[in-house]
Image (cartoon, rainbow, N blue to C red):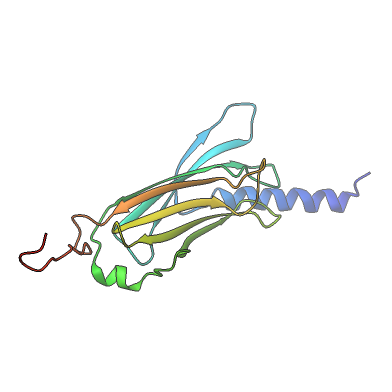
Length: 164
């Protein structure tokens, strides 16, 4: 049998988690999955902290009364402002790139992260959203790309005259 103070502590913790989850300043949408479920699709926006001309929208499921949210997520990123060569010069150009967004999805160390990776050969920014915990035998992930074509950051290949 649960002791009264344990029940009250659990209730307060759950209430605080619900309150905090409802106060996400980046949330732009909330889609209910039905009357008989506590799961919703939350839609958040993310402005890249370095490449400020890129905005990503991330959709993920949140289960208000569960200890862990599902790992599924979807991401879509677009150019929404200026992208300059100076911005691209500041980013991590390694194959693993930079984490630009992180959101807890569980009290058991599961996170959803968004990582920016630069594809220099194609002059494209890649944004991958992924779960840090294996679910059903796989790590859930989603990818979106933002080409630099048409931006100030695009570096056209210059060939010497007479070469094709």
